[in-house]
Length: 64
Image (cartoon, rainbow, N blue to C red):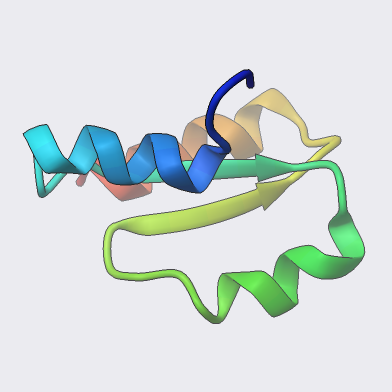
């Protein structure tokens, strides 16, 4: 993304809506588990490629 990365975008969005759930998607599966330990509340990470049902389940879980 020009001008900001995903984390910066999430922080900007949460400045307007602090409880906004954020799901990061990464193509670096080997780093996903390591990075996911440092995510804050209401934030999750999914590694690409993923099946659509896995994505939908993750989104449902974050919104519940």
